[in-house]
Length: 72
Image (cartoon, rainbow, N blue to C red; front, side, top):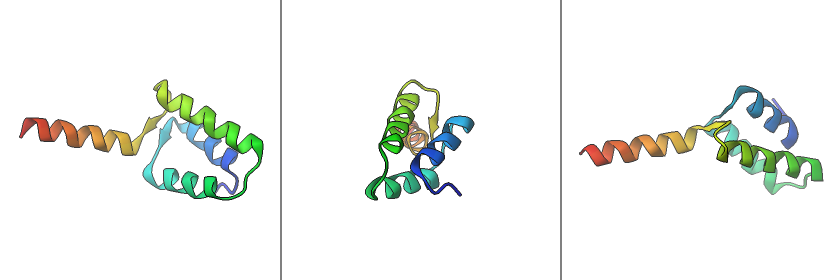
């Protein structure tokens, strides 16, 4: 398990997938004191998600729920 934020971000960028558990872990790490390179890594992750390079599980679940509710 990654102990630093930048290590966790590296794992997500490598897999291209941000699951809910890892997202919670990232949020917890952001609440702690961290180094500037950790924050930079997190910002890179945010850009990767926005650019579609990383799929964010929580957003995919939300989209699926919206699609189901539109059909109903």
